[in-house]
Image (cartoon, rainbow, N blue to C red; front, top):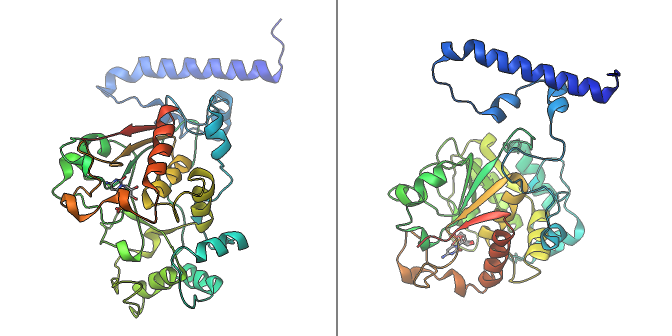
Length: 339
Ligand code: C5P
């Protein structure tokens, strides 16, 4: 006997739903000509109740693998902590231990009051995250594009551009390098000294490494009075205020302590963005990290002798590479090593 228990009702509803979709397809498909059928796209627009009925509750996303789903790697699950907030908002507080750690990153003689600096920033920008929320019917595919010279002649451009979210950092340019680095950017991570002008549709993810950086952001959007930090910085930026979000110092310390295990003075932009992406995406593919095939650690837009990321005394590039290689070996990211 088929009793009307909640579980049976769910099965019945799912069955009816499948029949409806199938008959819809059979009836209308010939009128539609060729259609693109992306189940996750259509399903994510269903009402919550229906979603919950058919939702495979054991999967947090619709990709082949989801970063946040349980895996066999103890190493990963000991580190990955989804309770650490990646972005600062109007209502964020910075714990004392984080503040004292953060104050030592780029020492300022007389740092201004941080709470006041944050109030000033969030009076100016809304600071709302524009990253899509996790959803069982969505696959958030992200490309994290570092600045390594190994991108040259890689032909990765179209693969990079195929991602939903494309994160670049610092002085990364795409013009003239489209074939190797792609042309789309959704999020660009930078700080005052690495500022470059961004296209209008790109979100600026601002990395504050000192209180003056937050003051610079306010100044650059209003009076233009700050023109020097430890080097000359642009007086003005033309990014729209609602396209600016702020990287959380608490997340920086989490990357430093937990992922980098204290190696290096503080984490590089590259590893900060990589771990940020683990928290914001379901699938992460890494491009432009590490040496090229000849062992050079330069930028893809500069000649070989201009920079050697590996010789940095602030960041530990070897430990960072080991972390990314480990993430790749346990299939949490895919590492594209370039040429
Ligand atoms: O040099 P920059 O910090 O702008 O580069 C962005 C990131 O790209 C670095 O923080 C680093 O993680 C990565 N990178 C790399 N190998 C290079 C150059 C940069 O892994 N040769």
